Image (cartoon, rainbow, N blue to C red; front, side, top):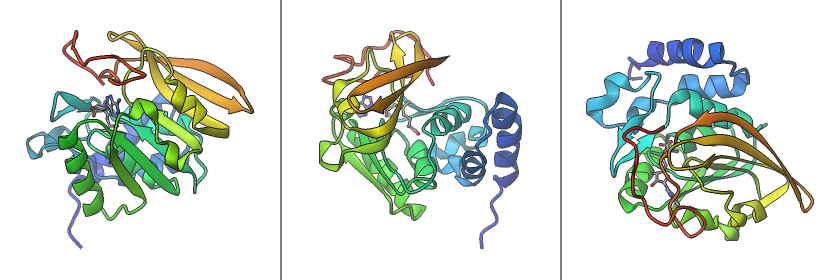
Length: 225
Ligand code: SAM
Protein backbone atom coordinates (compact mmCIF):
# COMPACT_ATOMS: atom_id res chain seq x y z
CA UNK A 1 0.00 0.00 0.00
CA UNK A 2 1.15 3.56 -0.77
CA UNK A 3 2.58 5.33 2.27
CA UNK A 4 0.41 8.22 3.46
CA UNK A 5 2.86 11.05 4.14
CA UNK A 6 0.08 13.21 5.60
CA UNK A 7 -0.90 10.78 8.36
CA UNK A 8 1.09 12.57 11.06
CA UNK A 9 -0.20 15.97 9.96
CA UNK A 10 -3.78 14.67 10.35
CA UNK A 11 -2.98 13.24 13.76
CA UNK A 12 -1.58 16.63 14.86
CA UNK A 13 -4.65 18.37 13.43
CA UNK A 14 -6.95 16.17 15.50
CA UNK A 15 -5.02 16.60 18.74
CA UNK A 16 -4.10 20.30 18.45
CA UNK A 17 -7.04 21.82 16.57
CA UNK A 18 -10.01 19.60 17.42
CA UNK A 19 -9.65 17.85 20.76
CA UNK A 20 -8.24 20.91 22.52
CA UNK A 21 -11.21 22.97 21.32
CA UNK A 22 -13.72 20.51 22.73
CA UNK A 23 -14.55 18.08 19.92
CA UNK A 24 -15.12 14.90 21.93
CA UNK A 25 -17.15 12.49 19.77
CA UNK A 26 -14.60 9.75 19.17
CA UNK A 27 -16.32 8.74 15.96
CA UNK A 28 -15.88 12.25 14.55
CA UNK A 29 -12.25 12.42 15.71
CA UNK A 30 -11.52 9.06 14.12
CA UNK A 31 -13.01 10.11 10.77
CA UNK A 32 -11.09 13.43 10.80
CA UNK A 33 -7.97 11.35 11.42
CA UNK A 34 -8.60 9.24 8.34
CA UNK A 35 -10.12 11.41 5.57
CA UNK A 36 -7.35 12.74 3.28
CA UNK A 37 -8.17 16.48 3.19
CA UNK A 38 -5.15 17.10 0.92
CA UNK A 39 -6.97 15.31 -1.93
CA UNK A 40 -9.79 17.88 -1.81
CA UNK A 41 -7.55 20.90 -2.50
CA UNK A 42 -5.42 22.03 -5.42
CA UNK A 43 -2.05 20.19 -5.49
CA UNK A 44 -0.30 23.55 -4.93
CA UNK A 45 -2.13 23.91 -1.60
CA UNK A 46 -1.56 20.41 -0.27
CA UNK A 47 1.20 21.61 2.02
CA UNK A 48 -1.49 23.62 3.90
CA UNK A 49 -4.23 20.98 3.83
CA UNK A 50 -4.04 20.25 7.58
CA UNK A 51 -3.53 23.81 8.75
CA UNK A 52 -6.05 25.49 11.03
CA UNK A 53 -7.73 27.44 8.24
CA UNK A 54 -10.21 27.40 5.37
CA UNK A 55 -8.59 27.15 1.93
CA UNK A 56 -9.67 28.41 -1.50
CA UNK A 57 -11.21 26.03 -4.04
CA UNK A 58 -12.30 27.00 -7.61
CA UNK A 59 -15.04 29.52 -8.36
CA UNK A 60 -14.15 31.72 -5.35
CA UNK A 61 -15.47 29.13 -2.92
CA UNK A 62 -13.76 27.52 0.07
CA UNK A 63 -13.16 24.24 1.86
CA UNK A 64 -14.00 24.96 5.50
CA UNK A 65 -11.54 24.98 8.40
CA UNK A 66 -11.13 21.43 9.82
CA UNK A 67 -12.44 22.53 13.23
CA UNK A 68 -15.67 23.84 11.69
CA UNK A 69 -16.14 20.60 9.72
CA UNK A 70 -15.65 18.56 12.89
CA UNK A 71 -17.89 20.84 14.99
CA UNK A 72 -20.78 20.79 12.50
CA UNK A 73 -20.46 17.01 12.14
CA UNK A 74 -20.52 16.55 15.91
CA UNK A 75 -23.57 18.83 16.21
CA UNK A 76 -25.52 16.55 13.85
CA UNK A 77 -25.32 13.82 16.55
CA UNK A 78 -24.89 10.98 14.06
CA UNK A 79 -24.81 7.47 15.48
CA UNK A 80 -24.35 5.64 12.18
CA UNK A 81 -26.62 4.62 9.34
CA UNK A 82 -28.56 7.92 8.96
CA UNK A 83 -29.72 9.60 5.77
CA UNK A 84 -28.03 12.99 5.67
CA UNK A 85 -28.53 15.97 3.38
CA UNK A 86 -25.71 18.47 2.82
CA UNK A 87 -26.24 21.81 1.08
CA UNK A 88 -22.97 23.17 -0.34
CA UNK A 89 -20.80 20.30 -1.61
CA UNK A 90 -17.84 22.56 -2.45
CA UNK A 91 -14.79 20.29 -2.58
CA UNK A 92 -16.72 17.27 -1.21
CA UNK A 93 -14.61 17.06 1.97
CA UNK A 94 -17.47 17.55 4.44
CA UNK A 95 -19.53 15.02 2.45
CA UNK A 96 -16.67 12.51 2.73
CA UNK A 97 -16.49 13.02 6.49
CA UNK A 98 -20.26 12.49 6.80
CA UNK A 99 -20.18 9.43 4.54
CA UNK A 100 -17.85 7.63 6.95
CA UNK A 101 -20.45 7.88 9.71
CA UNK A 102 -23.87 8.07 8.03
CA UNK A 103 -25.58 5.45 5.90
CA UNK A 104 -26.24 7.70 2.93
CA UNK A 105 -25.26 11.29 2.09
CA UNK A 106 -27.05 13.43 -0.49
CA UNK A 107 -25.02 16.55 -1.19
CA UNK A 108 -26.17 19.55 -3.24
CA UNK A 109 -24.06 22.10 -5.14
CA UNK A 110 -25.08 24.88 -7.53
CA UNK A 111 -21.75 25.30 -9.38
CA UNK A 112 -21.15 22.76 -12.15
CA UNK A 113 -17.33 22.81 -11.97
CA UNK A 114 -17.42 21.94 -8.27
CA UNK A 115 -19.95 19.15 -8.79
CA UNK A 116 -17.69 17.50 -11.39
CA UNK A 117 -14.55 17.82 -9.27
CA UNK A 118 -16.22 16.64 -6.05
CA UNK A 119 -17.72 13.60 -7.78
CA UNK A 120 -14.28 12.68 -9.09
CA UNK A 121 -12.60 12.96 -5.69
CA UNK A 122 -15.35 11.08 -3.84
CA UNK A 123 -15.36 8.24 -6.33
CA UNK A 124 -11.54 8.02 -6.25
CA UNK A 125 -11.91 7.42 -2.51
CA UNK A 126 -14.49 4.70 -3.14
CA UNK A 127 -17.23 6.53 -1.22
CA UNK A 128 -20.21 5.02 -2.98
CA UNK A 129 -22.75 6.12 -0.35
CA UNK A 130 -22.52 9.79 -1.43
CA UNK A 131 -24.55 11.26 -4.27
CA UNK A 132 -23.89 14.77 -5.61
CA UNK A 133 -26.71 16.80 -7.19
CA UNK A 134 -26.33 20.01 -9.21
CA UNK A 135 -29.34 21.95 -7.89
CA UNK A 136 -30.33 24.97 -5.81
CA UNK A 137 -29.86 23.43 -2.37
CA UNK A 138 -32.10 25.99 -0.66
CA UNK A 139 -34.97 23.90 -2.03
CA UNK A 140 -33.54 20.76 -0.45
CA UNK A 141 -34.03 17.41 -2.15
CA UNK A 142 -37.67 16.44 -1.56
CA UNK A 143 -37.46 13.17 -3.46
CA UNK A 144 -35.28 11.58 -0.78
CA UNK A 145 -36.77 13.34 2.30
CA UNK A 146 -37.14 13.03 5.24
CA UNK A 147 -33.57 13.29 6.54
CA UNK A 148 -32.37 12.56 10.06
CA UNK A 149 -29.77 15.30 9.67
CA UNK A 150 -29.28 18.30 7.38
CA UNK A 151 -26.15 20.45 7.22
CA UNK A 152 -25.79 23.70 5.30
CA UNK A 153 -22.21 24.79 4.68
CA UNK A 154 -22.96 28.25 3.29
CA UNK A 155 -24.32 31.35 5.04
CA UNK A 156 -28.11 31.65 5.04
CA UNK A 157 -29.97 34.93 5.64
CA UNK A 158 -32.66 32.82 7.40
CA UNK A 159 -33.47 29.12 7.73
CA UNK A 160 -34.73 27.91 4.34
CA UNK A 161 -38.30 26.67 4.93
CA UNK A 162 -37.97 23.65 2.54
CA UNK A 163 -35.08 22.33 4.66
CA UNK A 164 -37.14 22.51 7.85
CA UNK A 165 -39.95 20.67 6.11
CA UNK A 166 -37.59 17.92 4.89
CA UNK A 167 -36.28 17.22 8.38
CA UNK A 168 -37.57 13.97 9.89
CA UNK A 169 -39.03 13.57 13.39
CA UNK A 170 -36.26 14.32 15.92
CA UNK A 171 -34.02 15.48 13.07
CA UNK A 172 -31.23 18.05 13.42
CA UNK A 173 -30.47 20.91 11.03
CA UNK A 174 -27.11 22.67 11.48
CA UNK A 175 -26.38 25.87 9.57
CA UNK A 176 -24.87 29.37 9.73
CA UNK A 177 -27.54 32.09 9.84
CA UNK A 178 -26.91 35.83 9.68
CA UNK A 179 -25.57 38.55 7.41
CA UNK A 180 -23.07 38.22 4.60
CA UNK A 181 -20.35 39.48 6.93
CA UNK A 182 -20.84 37.05 9.80
CA UNK A 183 -23.26 34.47 11.11
CA UNK A 184 -24.13 32.34 14.13
CA UNK A 185 -23.98 28.60 13.83
CA UNK A 186 -27.45 27.31 14.71
CA UNK A 187 -28.86 23.87 15.41
CA UNK A 188 -32.56 23.30 14.80
CA UNK A 189 -34.46 20.26 16.05
CA UNK A 190 -37.83 18.97 14.93
CA UNK A 191 -40.40 17.52 17.30
CA UNK A 192 -43.63 16.85 15.41
CA UNK A 193 -44.55 20.16 13.82
CA UNK A 194 -42.51 22.13 16.37
CA UNK A 195 -38.97 23.38 15.92
CA UNK A 196 -36.56 24.53 18.63
CA UNK A 197 -33.15 26.01 18.04
CA UNK A 198 -29.88 26.89 19.72
CA UNK A 199 -27.37 29.56 18.68
CA UNK A 200 -23.93 28.11 19.19
CA UNK A 201 -20.90 29.93 17.75
CA UNK A 202 -19.95 32.88 15.54
CA UNK A 203 -18.74 31.85 12.05
CA UNK A 204 -18.15 33.39 8.59
CA UNK A 205 -19.16 31.38 5.52
CA UNK A 206 -19.54 32.14 1.80
CA UNK A 207 -23.15 33.03 0.96
CA UNK A 208 -25.92 30.52 0.32
CA UNK A 209 -27.30 31.71 -3.03
CA UNK A 210 -30.72 30.62 -4.20
CA UNK A 211 -34.49 30.91 -3.96
CA UNK A 212 -34.45 30.66 -0.15
CA UNK A 213 -31.02 32.23 0.32
CA UNK A 214 -29.26 35.33 -0.94
CA UNK A 215 -30.32 36.43 -4.39
CA UNK A 216 -26.82 36.87 -5.82
CA UNK A 217 -23.28 36.01 -4.82
CA UNK A 218 -21.89 39.52 -4.60
CA UNK A 219 -18.96 39.43 -2.17
CA UNK A 220 -18.24 41.98 0.48
CA UNK A 221 -15.32 40.51 2.36
CA UNK A 222 -12.08 38.89 1.33
CA UNK A 223 -11.84 35.75 3.40
CA UNK A 224 -14.36 33.15 4.41
CA UNK A 225 -14.64 29.80 6.14
N1 SAM B 1 -18.75 21.69 2.38
C1 SAM B 1 -17.75 22.21 1.50
C2 SAM B 1 -16.47 21.44 1.56
O1 SAM B 1 -16.35 20.53 2.39
O2 SAM B 1 -15.59 21.74 0.75
C3 SAM B 1 -17.49 23.68 1.67
C4 SAM B 1 -18.64 24.48 1.19
S1 SAM B 1 -18.30 26.13 0.70
C5 SAM B 1 -17.93 26.90 2.22
C6 SAM B 1 -19.98 26.60 0.31
C7 SAM B 1 -20.53 25.95 -0.94
O3 SAM B 1 -21.93 26.20 -0.99
C8 SAM B 1 -19.94 26.52 -2.22
O4 SAM B 1 -19.38 25.50 -2.98
C9 SAM B 1 -21.14 27.16 -2.91
O5 SAM B 1 -21.11 27.09 -4.32
C10 SAM B 1 -22.28 26.32 -2.34
N2 SAM B 1 -23.59 26.93 -2.44
C11 SAM B 1 -23.98 28.21 -2.23
N3 SAM B 1 -25.30 28.36 -2.42
C12 SAM B 1 -25.78 27.12 -2.76
C13 SAM B 1 -27.07 26.60 -3.09
N4 SAM B 1 -28.16 27.36 -3.11
N5 SAM B 1 -27.17 25.29 -3.38
C14 SAM B 1 -26.09 24.48 -3.36
N6 SAM B 1 -24.85 24.91 -3.08
C15 SAM B 1 -24.69 26.21 -2.77
